[in-house]
Each structure stands twice: as structure tokens, then as C-alpha cells.
Amino acid sequence: MSQHLFQSYQPIAAIALTPSAVRILSPFCRSSGAILHLSASLAEQISHSEPKQIYHTSLKDHLAAIWPHYQALVFGVAVGAVVRLIAPLLGHKTEDPAIIVVAPEGQFVISLCSGHQGGADQLTRLIAQQLSATPIITSASTQLNLPSVDIFGDRFGWRKGQGDWNGVSSAIARLEPVQVIQEAGSTLWQNNLPTEHPFYFDLSDDVSFKGRIWISPTVRRFSETSEIAKVQWHPRVLWVGIGCIRGATMAQITAAVEQVLQRFHLAPKAIAGLSTIDLKADEIGLLEYAQSSQLPLKTYSAEVLKTVAVPNPSDIVEKAVNTPSVAEAAALEAAKEYGKAVLLVQKQITDAVTIAIAQSELEYIGRTGYIGLVGIGPGNLDQITPAASTAITSADVIIGYSLYTDLIQLLIHPSQIIESLPITQEVQRAQRAIQLAQWGLSVVVISSGDCGIYGMAGLVLEQLSLNRWDGKTPQVEVFPGISALQATASRVGAPLMHDFCAISLSDLLTPLDIIEKRLEAAAKADFVTAIYNPRSKTRLQPLLTAHEIFLKYRDPLTPVAIVHSVYRQEEEIFLTTLEKMLESPIDMLTTILIGNSTTFIHENWMITPRGYLKNF
Ligand code: SAH
Image (cartoon, rainbow, N blue to C red):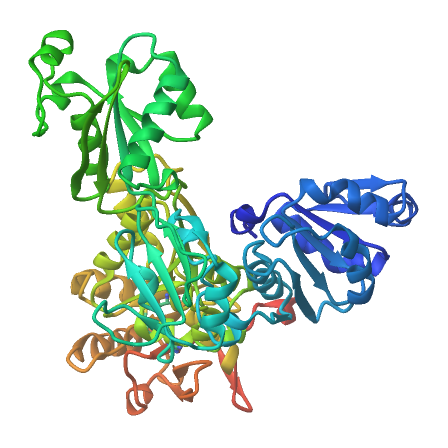
């Protein structure tokens, strides 16, 4: 499995006290990169290859030593013992590591502490999926199927501002009316709310609110005595354009930026990044400021900057650096990379530094995007691989055809963004996935069956290659699924035991003459043949042609399986022969398997000999 899925919880420690707990936790350690912590005596009893840390003190002392260094601790230890062990170490939920307990048989995974902010709930879901265990999550918003107010902005790189987070969370948990005033940042989080939710988005709503969520680059001061619990999230939409004299110090720049932000009531946490002219790319004070505030610094040439329309161009600046504006133009130019840009603060001049601030339409997420290409299997959730379902659960965005997003509804939780597009819009789906991943989100694109067999995987990779993708950013991973031909075969026996091939009869993307050529070749070469996309309401001819071609080369009594909606509720299975195959119902949710010259039926089981018994 992919370590990417567990990236945001690293570093993770797994703690086991018995060999059986080591056995349960080992696969998780291998796939997540978690470090297994073992006492010296336990380490002697077992052999394994995971990264491990051996301690020689008591577990209590060892935990105290490692507590500040891990984001998550996963225990294969009884809940009662874990509670006693961690009790003296617990500080505040914003700082404590996520605490998770895996039950001794691996049947339950419990989110014990730091559920929201520490990410324990989400990590619990991921581990449970991997172990095919039941996740036990007791936080209120999870029960209500609502996004948690204290984390839902994280995926967009928003930063939490001041406020009464407990107050607003409790109001939401009680389903009391909460007003949302969103002045910036993505509204995609609103799209997947359950029908019953406490949020009011319309400013004209006249309701007696118990909570308010501001989503804005502006800082609000909340009165201590207000009846309403309020919080603020700051999407990173501010681009600070900076001009400065040679040798301006970090202290001068810091002071100038802080002053301007304060004067205009803007939140430092809403800063996306800094920008300036390329001549300043080596300005030490500026570089130090960018580094210490962990902000990206974008630089532009004078040629670019002078094309930007600004309210306060200056002749003096133009004479000095060949563009009439540095701060305003650089702020706007950087903001423009993230959608429409508006100059929020015109240039403010102090002795050494000039500052202007532009607001971008889209927030800066500040992460490298990811695309998971996921096959969800033929239907029922028990036919999906744990790796695929973990990828789905950990994604920010799930893109797929609505029939498939419905099939995986149980894996999806409310703060995830679901984008279902109609079945014909594959290219749009691929482009959307790339766009969101390039922005910094982690996206999964789902296909039924296997994503790389007549699925979305190839299309997304093709599109990426057209976008001059470097193969790394966004990071891409492919998660295989059980394809219709395997699922179909499993329901009728073992027809694919010898060489086989798959042919799609859809002529939407493949010219008919090529389909015919391949049918001829497969029929002639005696391949067991799986027919995908056999017949639509309007496309009848290719199946008739396929039938004719196979009859030319194969016995009319060759066994044929016709399976409709395999592993779904509407599943129907017909075992028939080549000559009679067209008498069974066949549609676009059907896969046909035509046996080879040795395939036979025994008591309704379709069997293709591999050849073992011939030499026996
Ligand atoms: N990626 C998919 C194939 C998509 S092409 C996979 O690997 O299975 C769509 C075709 O797949 C359908 O026309 C049908 O022939 C087949 N198919 C997909 N799901 C199916 C199911 N549940 N039962 C039977 N056939 C199915």
C-alpha cells in the first residue's frame, strides 16, 4: 500500500506488547512507514523486518520520552492500559498526538484521543479499512455525518484563527443554527453536506444563531460577552507584493508587513505568499523573512511586471528598475496565478519597504497534489481491495460517474468533496482531476472494475502527458481492482484458466474494422474471449458480427457465460452455448465469456482445462 496515504499523520509510532500484537500491527507498519516500538525482551522473541525502535526502560517512561516526537501513536494494547499510560501525558487536543487502539484480533480500531485535530478519527478509518476492521469513532460530528468545524478547512490549506472552537462545535453537534459567512476560499466543502445540517449560508436569513463561522482573510475581534460562539478560518488568499531598498533587513520587512496587515485588519495567517521583482531574488532580508515565515517567494521580471495595470505607477521606480511598479504589480501577478486577482491594499510606503496586497480568487493550498487512480471492483464493497478503499477514504476529492460514487457511499465521509459527472464526460472528469491535483488537493478518480482496463487510468495519464507532466508532480498512483472478466469468471467457475483476451465491442472510440480484426484473430487463435460493452440500446450490429465470426471458427456448442451486473444486487447469470448466446438478455452491464475449444460445463460450472490432467 501507499505510504502517501499516511503521509499527513507522520511520524507514526506503533506500540506492541505481545507477539500477536506485533503480527496485527506489522502489515500496517509496512504500508504506512510507522515505526514499531518494542521492549528489548519482546524484540528477542520475534523476527521481523519493519523499522523498529527497541526500548530498555518501562513502557511508561518510553512513552513519556517519545510523546512529543510523534503525530500519532497506534497501540496494540488493551484500551484500559492505554488510558492509564497516556493519562499523565495528555496536554491539549491541539497538541497531543492522535491515539489509536487496535483490538487484539484486529477486528476493531478505536479512535481514542485527539480525534479531530490530531487526525485520530481519519487515521482510524484508514487503518480499519486496511485491516478490514470496524472503525470506532465517537465524535459528535461523525455521528451526524457532518464535517468537523475545526478541521474542514485543513484540506484547502486554510488556517485557523481565533475563536470559540468548542462552542461552535457543540452548537453543530446539537444541530443548532450556525451561520456561515464565507468571503474567500473554496466553497467545494459545502457540496456534500447531508440534507439535515445546521449551516445557514444566506446572509439575509433571520434566525437566532448559536454559532457563526467566518471564512475570510480579514481578522475579526470577537466580544467576550457575545451570546453566539464564533470562529474564523483564514483561507490563504493574500499575496504580499514587496519592494525594498537594497539591504533592507528582515526586521524592517517584517515590521512593514505586520503594520500594513494590522492597518487593514488582515490576518497574517491568510498570507499565501510573497512576491517581488527578480532583481530582489537575492535580497537577504527578504529571503530571511520568507524562510522564517515559511512563505513562498515568487519573483517576476521587469518585462512581466510592466504589463500589469496598477493604480500607482511611479516614474522613479521605472527609471530605477524598468517597470513603473514592483509591489502592486508583483502582488497582482502572483495572485493571478490563482484565479481572478484584486488589489486589496494599494502600495504602502515606509522608509525601506513598499508593500501592496492582492487577493486571489482561489486559495493557496501549499501542498503537492496527488491523483489516485482507483478501481473499485465490480460492485459490492467486499470486492474492493483494502488499498483502494483506503485511497478513497483518505482523498480530499472523489471524482467518478454517479453510479460508482453511489456504490462506494459507505466509504465516503462528509468533509470529502464528491464530483459526479455523467458517464459520457470522461475527458472532463480527467481534466478536473488534474486541475484539482495541480491546485494541491488529493484526488481519486474511480472506475468500476479495474481502472486500467477500459477505465479512467489511461485517460488521466494521457491527459497528464499532454500537460507536459514530469511524472512526479502531481504524484500519481494506480490502485487495481477486480475487472468484470475476473468477477464474471468467478461466478461461473474457472473459464479463464488458459490464454484469454478481452475485446470491447464499443465503436465509440475504436473503429469497427479494428474490432472485427481482433475478433477474427481471437476466434481463430482459440483464446477464451471476454466481451466487454457487448450491446447498447442503439449499438446492436457489433455483437451480431462477433457472433458470426466466432461461429466461423468454434463449435456451436462452445460454452458461453453471460453475466449481468456481477456482484451487484441485480446480478443475473446465464450459461449457454455459442449458437444460442444471442437468446439471453445482453446489455451494457453484461460481460460475455466465450470458452475455447476445450472449455466444458459440468453441473453448471464452466471449466477451461489448464492441462494438468493431460500429463497425469
Ligand atoms: N473498468 C471496467 C470495465 C469498464 S467497460 C472493468 O475493469 O471491469 C464497461 C463494461 O464492463 C460494461 O459494458 C460491461 O461489459 C463490463 N462490466 C462492468 N461492470 C460490470 C458488472 N458489474 N457486471 C458485468 N459486466 C460489467
